[in-house]
Image (cartoon, rainbow, N blue to C red):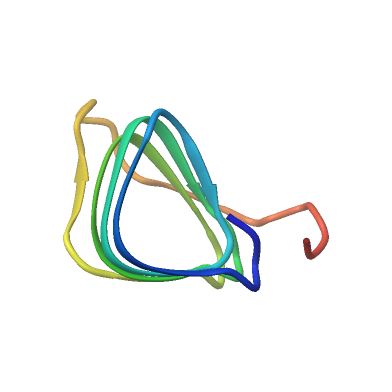
Length: 79
């Protein structure tokens, strides 16, 4: 999901890379990567989650694998 995109509602995906704005609920079967430009006001359920420094995540976060959420410095340029 690109940096300038927005979604209001529920999203279900196998894997996802989010850079835009989401409001609602996000359910990802495998890996979720949240980019530095992302603003997420949603409950998140994913097997693994990586969140870039600068991203905004407001909601309940559940990692189904039991692993901790990974924080990272995003290296790629803006989309």
